[in-house]
Image: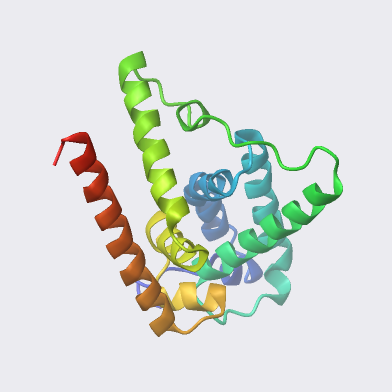
Length: 189
């Protein structure tokens, strides 16, 4: 393996080298927490779910067979855990908690005016994303927010790579058009 080839943390763990897995946990915690928070988990629950993903991965190292890049395997594990979380919440009377304010959730300390602008922009972007068809939105989020490649997204969603490319193209086109219309309405464009 060359130095430019990333080390698969679970293969290294299975071989007795814990350092790559520990490095993966250090570098991926934030993005996994963001993934769960973006799905609708509260900040504290998102942290708990990220830790559960790491535990599941750690415990599965002995039987792990790399059939795809490790990040895709990790996010599939996270997605499956979120599905389990939703099923569990559906059985509880309180259900899934509402999403908190994005500015407070990530702990950004801005002056009040900037915080309001940030929150307004966040709501506008979330509204535009919500208007996308679910398949397009999921592809867009996985590609841009979680930096997965098109083949990884195809594997994760069980769709052909061509479908991933098509959905991404149409999602970007719709978002760009909607954003330009919004700016024109506000007299910014």
